[in-house]
Image (cartoon, rainbow, N blue to C red):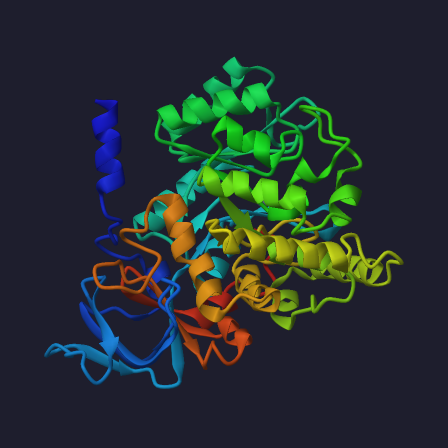
Length: 469
Ligand SMILES: [Zn+2]
């Protein structure tokens, strides 16, 4: 019975709600059953080379035709929008996209208001929460979005974090395999589809959590340290967060089940293409364990990077902005080149290149935490620019940010690429993304379920409120 129910739940296509509340409709600019977007530059999420002068036909929220503008038949009665000069990409799939925010100065808030608007307005149409602090706020927000009561992305719920005795705070400390199983069973019943393990969990407890999760059709990811990447792969984990800078495989002094204090210093000096890196990457690739890149949350810890984006500063609450700029000053004048060195940051990029070159499935997310310099949505966009800096092509970077995430979430059949049969989640960007990476910052219309949302209006609604609610 349980298995059948699960099967139906997974097979059911995401549906747009029957009606959208006024608070959602105020952001809607396009809502028509039959729509054609013509003459776009398409980066379709499959990794294929960008295609100029394409047309996309959308019927009842689904993509029904994609191809050269000269050959795609526009059905009679279609609302046709000439998008010459724009790029279209799939809706971004944010795989480390929390609905809480932590900032310089010690602020930490749930983003039930700003989060969904920032994500959707920035072109992120699907998020995985990847660890929650107020799980019910997130479960209820997902429900409100799914029912058309509030604007926002599709949400895949992750339970509260689980960690070990050395951790704590807002996280569940699991001290036995039995406690780990009990935790997973409870949150699975409440609607979580993912478990997030954190830096102090022990192998036995992580292993039990993974077993229980898999039994229930759930998946497990981790921001690990006490357990190395290779140990977690052996335990059957599905996904690993953050890449090289959280891989304690690089610390040769590490004791089992303990996060070493020397870890960051060790990994910062390590070779991202050396023997440890290769063994770690091979372990993930062979066992089909995916990795989530979160370059945008690391960058603000590095001195003298372009981390004073005016859009970010304007969206922040003034007190949060002051604290951020003070901390910026401390980091930018730090004698060691910041709290994360430029070298470590470059190594993290090189490790990600090596992982993808080895055939690894890498996705991306913003992780709007740390000192609060990477905001929901804006930081997802920043990841694109950082992937280009890291040496990925535009087609590769977009695939990482769309189809690869959809594969990890198990929704690639319905989302993640711009192809016939998929849900019409796509982003219209003003300009040529392949010529200028900053075009990722310029969504004009963000389509979710074929409904077009006004990006500028969504983003205007959060000005000065990030760090408040
Ligand atoms: Zn996180």
